[in-house]
Length: 263
Ligand SMILES: NC(=O)c1ccc[n+]([C@@H]2O[C@H](COP(=O)([O-])OP(=O)(O)OC[C@H]3O[C@@H](n4cnc5c(N)ncnc54)[C@H](O)[C@@H]3O)[C@@H](O)[C@H]2O)c1
Image (cartoon, rainbow, N blue to C red; front, top):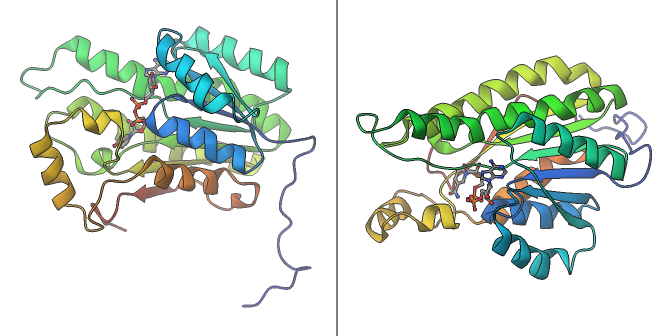
């Protein structure tokens, strides 16, 4: 059905100025590209990552933040609730609000379950799942009160298919989508959307860490015939974070080159 301009739903416009986006894992392989692409949609972007990664932070400041004045860096540990609370308070004080939250911080602690230690289990859960709770819990009230928000949580194809040696990672990533669907229901009437993006294997340090043999096998199994790029993932995040994406919520967007197809 053709819609005239008059009958098309109005796109929500920012009440004041540019959208403020917060990207956790913001100096990582995928997070950096998400920051870059969000500035191209005219957002002010705050990259959030561990203060301990001082070399990478310096490189990020030199290579990215220096040429994109809309990107700044803030240290925080997403596994620590108080750190997230203080971070959001700082951003709200500096920029007035947080409109977009992208949870891209993540770690792996691979081991077959037979060998997995409780420490490997808990460390991963604290970052990959508690981290999503800690950040969402601290931005959601402001977003719903202002009547606008976009939350995009980065999950993984391995949360959909399971992966050998990744009971912890697969459980956390599947949990991220369950969390997103539940929060999407809680916030849908308040202008806040919550979605998941599930990357397949991407050309980042996380995947570079696997052996050349396994890497070649992974690529052979991807119908598109290559690893994903951080730009492939960032494009999807920017799409979901846009003002006019308000009718997409509780969705999981797979970006995996056809590696896992489902409906
Ligand atoms: N690379 C892939 O192929 C792939 C595939 C599927 C999903 N993912 C997911 O995409 C996201 C980004 O992955 P990536 O490949 O860019 O990895 P990466 O390791 O390059 O980036 C992850 C970032 O998270 C940060 N981080 C870790 N613990 C943190 C904490 N406690 N607080 C704040 N920041 C913390 C790291 O310092 C790092 O900069 C992750 O959630 C990952 O699970 C990646």
